Image (cartoon, rainbow, N blue to C red):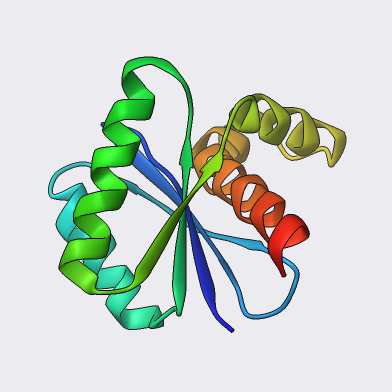
Amino acid sequence: MRFIGIDYGASKIGLASSETKIAEPLTVLRGNRLFERTVDLIKKYSPEMVVVGISENESGKQSREFARRLSKTTGIKTVLEDETLSTYEAQNLARLQNIGRRRRSKLEDAFAATIVLQSYLDKNV
């Protein structure tokens, strides 16, 4: 089964993928038309399920709305997974792996999406 994990942000979206029980970073989308570009990427990878990270507060509401729109637009089952501290954890893991600051900042949202997706996989697959 193929999964896509998403770390949603208003200005950038981190994506991860999995075809096994191990999630891997995919890419970070930045700039304009983030929703449409995310839909295009999902269509390209044809996952059976999309896992969207949600947090508390206003960004959590935005993540929920993003997930709802994504499911409606793609027709692909979309589930929510707690993303509390995923970016912080991704930054720490990248530092431990000696990934340089520049590369780390470019990919940290994809790493966060990987952590969100891996959390879901560990609990449900």
